[in-house]
Length: 165
Image 1 (cartoon, rainbow, N blue to C red):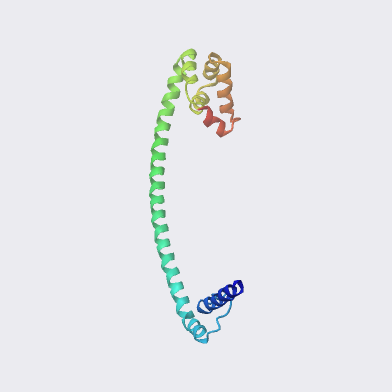
Image 2 (image 1 turned 90 degrees about the vertical axis):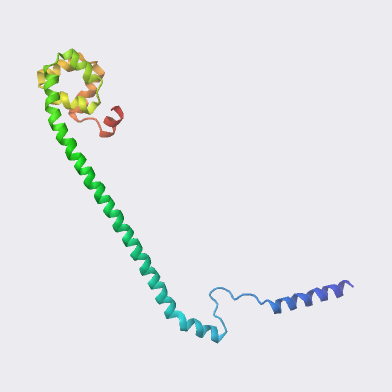
């Protein structure tokens, strides 16, 4: 009985394989001449459709890039205008601020410069006369005076100046 069951199972497996043949392996040539002829006939049309799709995609991407470039150009112009106005303001205020600090008592100027950002305080000190600047530095804490002197001399890296400010 076991042998009969095995024979029946084997026959059923063969019938199943005949109804559902295995798919052809990738890269294997199809033996059906009609299928090969069909593939050969539509190859040019498929290539043309692929090229047309790629062309449309590139056109869309080009328009997107042009739009982004326009936005960036507008932003650049806006920042240039802002920078121009800022530089004009600093040029005007710079002279006035230096004049104010040059007329202050060294103790008062030292207290105010000690609480400013490094770059601002160093710029003011650099534009003061040597006698006024030395008097102000003399009134500051030695560590802060040395720090500002380093900024004036440019011995500090820009990253250090940003961290300290």
